[in-house]
Image (tube, helix red, strand yellow):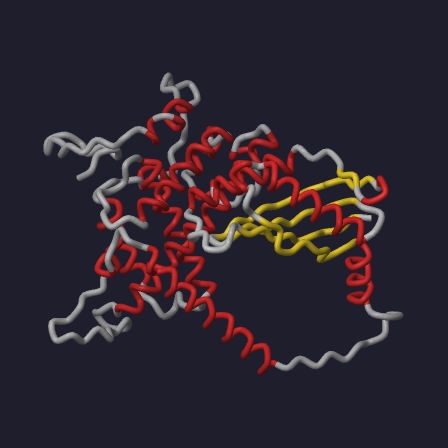
Length: 362
């Protein structure tokens, strides 16, 4: 019978919050070891087969969703906990980590029972009473919690002040602001800053999942109908987004995450980093949507100001233009995508008489 388990592994007590690059490393180590498991020998020689797994790493630890084929629930839980403990012990960089929780969350029987319940008994009509007030209260509490999480995450952004989102502190000290008027409040800027950092965490996890998908399939993004993050890059180059490209873009995004926590910013260091900033903004927009804030914030205006600070004149919009690619063109597009996007940007001022290249800062 198949069982889905959820396991949580934690770093030693007192470990600082993991940054984006560290989270990527932890995910890679866990995935590499789990991929090597062909089968597990449980108690009394019982064979347990790992079928699938998914890894999500947060600043305070990692969660593993694991699907196992085992003869009984107890065997699945015991064997999984034992194997994860051994896996951590033999992985040098994770030796001090520990398994906090490992339990079955669903089985074939659970799903069958749920489906049976959904079909109803004997086709009889079932009267269902829904408490709309309770649902509204739950929704409000969830959005309030997300709002607080965004405010907490704002402190992680060191590269920009709130003026990078359009906030201007009045000389008289009034910082209340009015999002419906001309001013942007400090809290609005704080929420968007927190959404950027939270969105960056999500984007890093999504890119890691895309890397796995492309590696497992041996295909490009253009051959995949569903990807987590790479679909947000310029679509006309999708045929050249290989697993190797995805890894390089993931590293670029992880480095961007580190740079955003530092106290200074000198603009994107490559076109890939500029593209990563665009993806982070979209991830931030989604975080604000989950918190029910899209209608409260003048987000278009705030991101317009942010682009001036963050991109420093680097133009990437032309890459998203709907241009037909000439396959007979002698230009090696693959080299362009895999190399030029990751090359350092030129920082010299362009010649006023010459057209501005997208790889130049204006």
